Image 1 (cartoon, rainbow, N blue to C red):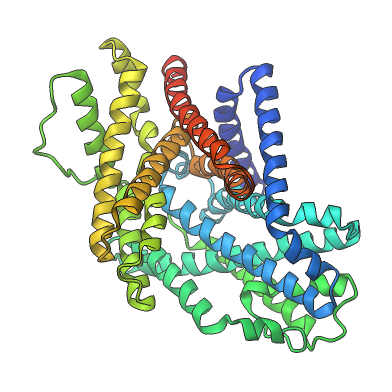
Image 2: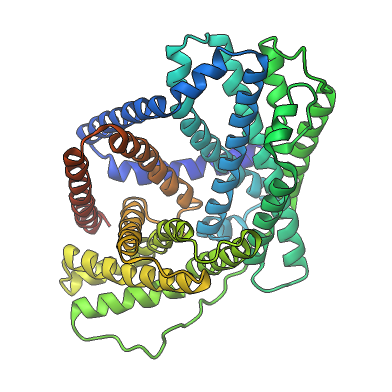
Length: 486
């Protein structure tokens, strides 16, 4: 256990070092704290405007309404945990330099995996608590629900989130062990695919509005909101529900213990050579063209990028076949936001080249422009492939808007990956990078929703233009800063 905590502490030190490079002066720390506080405050205001009317009816209703609120929010927490788990596993390499070095030390497989799992759990639970707090906390405070109610609700929420995370981790480690034991190819790809299919199938077969309403009188022990009776027990609102609390306790403990036990199964993967796609595409002699082509080649050869693309493509086909969404533009909007993930590990792949860029006098703005344009090409190619897979040809108006989402998604992922680069020298740094992205993105969504609902069109247009200019400026500034600090 001590060795696991030391590994976790080492990972946190590496993360702290990366954050320290960004916030290296008191002025930057103060400015970042002020901006984060302002965005969180505006997001809380937007969240309250969106959810206040519904939450008030729940909070001041009878026990049935309170039960439905608890069940629905714990279900939302489980959905967020599932989403974050899949995304983090997809963007994080199976192997990093620290795990290779640890293999030469007297550290057992369980100790190493537990050391990696502790920061992973911390990040996921922090994100879930942050998002749910923005939605609920303002209404809890304004409606004066009381500290005991708030503490019981969020404590139960964390227990539910940890249970869901443990259950998915158990499923993932079990499937991955079978894949590696059978020496099957594309183990991570098929593991994630089977995990996603299992989650979706379980949700489709067991979740229903009628079932959630019936939990008021007879609890169904659904994994997505298993802990909700404990919260109702803590506030004295469990009298009407038929439930076996001991069974809930046994299920919770059993899944958590089995999940930790599955850490014995996870092995360090051996290094593999990346595929040499676009090998015949020549590198131009001009600096800009060389950087542009190099970016396309390096990113299309990245194993993580290939895994993410094929995983999304298979899931798109699965969703279309299951729900008959052929030709539905809504799916393209979601995919347009996803294709930008190809940019997240771009700068991490390029860190070793910065010294060479300086020798050949490659300017930071030249590298940033060439790399971003190459990433836009890759995002566009992915989007066109997804259009073909979904049999969707968007209308001209919505087509430009979908393209705009893809462009901004790519730029935002690239900015995040430049500020906190993803590379194999920093274990699980993708978690920190994605945490940084979500801390910025979640408030922006609530602020954007609030402006769309309450601000005049002139203010909306001004806010949109300002946001675009700030994004472009941030990309160039971050690139210039990284060139000077690497």
